[in-house]
Amino acid sequence: SQPSFDLTNATNYPTSALSGTITNAQLAGSIDQSKLNNGIPVEKINIGTYWDALSPDGSATNFDLSRTIPQGFDLVIVVRNGVVQKQVSSSPSTDEFTVSRNGGSGGVARITMGAAVPAGEDLRVFFLAA
Image 1 (spheres, rainbow, N blue to C red):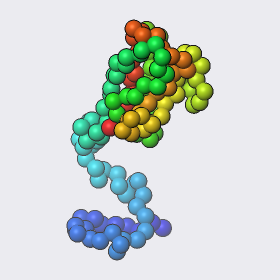
Image 2 (image 1 turned 30 degrees about the vertical axis):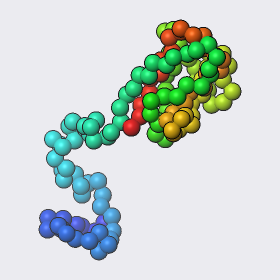
Image 3 (image 1 turned 180 degrees about the vertical axis):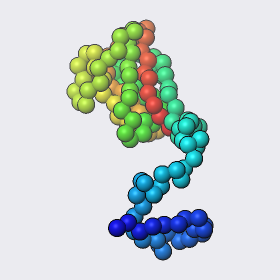
Image 4 (image 1 turned 30 degrees about the horizontal axis):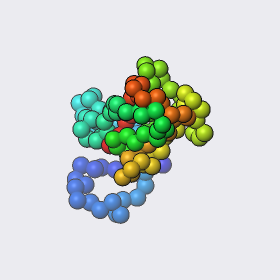
């Protein structure tokens, strides 16, 4: 049987003094729906979306982004002259790229293209970062 908890007067109660489990049924109605309706505001998450416009010079294959990409954020989109490139885990070919979350100068993220991108081509990267 589950212990019954009355949390009405449980302010300043040390968690080390609590034992047992609380079921979802016991919690039902304890969080006002209005607090859940809008989710978590983006300013509290501290994650943003970024578009970096890169400047290919005809010889470089490595391009540093403007920020570090946090662990677990796998959404990195490279667009070359309007065409989305394929992300691979290693050894990219001509129209592919790899991502190092913090391998760029100063610890920012770096993409490595499979081949040098000719000067003047449009190269942009969309990603999520803190």
